[in-house]
Length: 188
Image 1: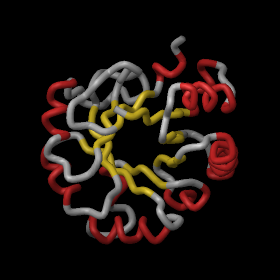
Image 2 (image 1 turned 45 degrees about the horizontal axis):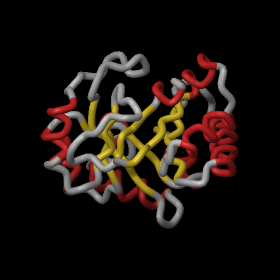
Image 3 (image 1 turned 90 degrees about the horizontal axis):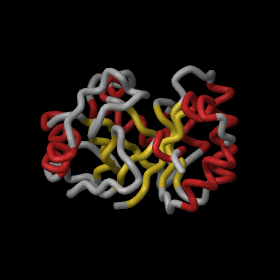
Image 4 (image 1 turned 90 degrees about the vertical axis):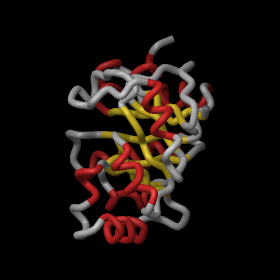
């Protein structure tokens, strides 16, 4: 499995790490993708962070929930609830998102069950996020699916799968291309 690093701004502050330290750590661990998530910052702050991250990180930087800022990086990740804020259908929303991205930019979509995965199979996505594998401190309301169920559900996807939710650096999940690791990055 490949490493997809999740940089949550709140966690970064809580652990007292700099962006440089985080990026250095995930690059040493071999991360291909880094998603930046900030649920409380304003767009100006988030824009600045994305510019810093794209200068520091040698892989693909993805922004969470801010497609209007995706031109600064390599893609956007949205949740199910965010998808229909752009258009009346998921297909139209994805087309709008695709037009907001730089050439070659990725669109990722969170999924949590078979119905959402099957619906995502018909969309022009680059990957799906699937979980939660375990309980996590940053997404307290997420339903925990467990590792085996995530593996079974991942097999249904026609898109590459990024397994998420409480994953550790050494976790392996069959049928998933990426392991999304957040808090475990800070553990030495």
